[in-house]
Amino acid sequence: MAQGRKRVEQLRLTGKGSANLYGEYELGGLNVLYVLADRPSAYGLPQNPLVAAGNLVGNWLSGVATAGVLTLLPFWLLFRRKESLAAQVTVEPQKGE
Image (tube, rainbow, N blue to C red; front, side, top):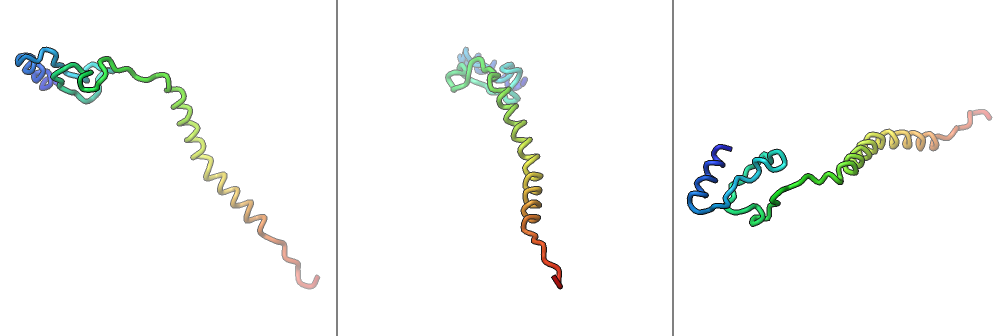
């Protein structure tokens, strides 16, 4: 981080007044820092990024549903096969009848 700040200062001294370190404070830190010579929008980056919180509940519920299906599917297939095999077994008549 210190190296990024130093590079931003170097850019500002060379006339790039809008140079900045992107990713240091955005969304609590992005884990990746970008030294930008211009404003973030010039590079296709949002100036003030936001987390899309509107889909969190739906995404969480779909994950739970998927986990439930993946958990129950093997048991359903196992019992279905067991019933299928039981239906195929025929009672053979005993000899002498």
